[in-house]
Image (cartoon, rainbow, N blue to C red; front, side, top):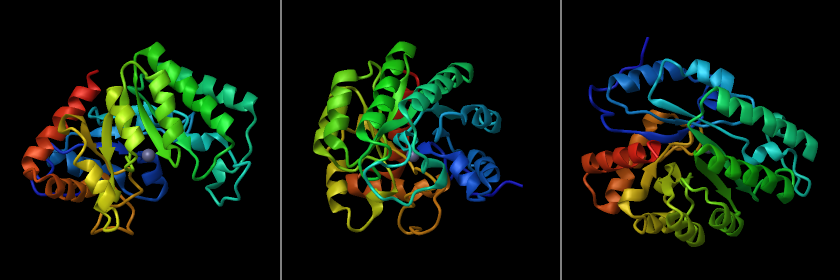
Length: 284
Ligand SMILES: [Zn+2]
């Protein structure tokens, strides 16, 4: 049975970044949620890969939803257990990986991207907060996949945590030509400037609604409205007033409301603008 929302409540709403598999792993009834959302006008979004070999299963699970586009990648967490920082991260990312293993996993991923027609490469990037593997391993994954994006003519979805300078320098150098999305933008001026120059879109997540994030809301005003996207990053980063609960795409409505207030744009107009941006991005 599908969840019911008001008719048209989600008309023109998109969610540019969510992780269906991570929601399923938390026992969330994702499919009845999607059925309800699409029945009330939801326009879809991008389901993001978490690990190098998850595309076959994700592509089968999401086949009934043509408006959910697939991205596949090795994120920085796949560089393995941190060699410099004591961390308590999920078991699947707690094994040390050698360069050989990373190369082999990249090979599996590339084949899957081609076989399952992933529309984007993401999320990829650098995470110097968790310090997965080491910087050399993270950069190997990041740069290899940026090269593929050019080769395959695909856009990328970028994850940046505490790595602003290296992210900006790398996308300045390696593009890719078709650009991409800076996902869950956290307010870095350097990243914003470089990303806009390189034709990227800037996506804001639920953390823009957090009371302490005044600075991020100020940065939001500096993003040209034709480069603005919104996302949940479900099941993470639940917006206020639902913060603390697991996130899911219907909660994006609170992020739309916050952004419409900050920018002084009518909510309906914001939905249309973000949808248009998303469609322009997806048709690159
Ligand atoms: Zn994500």
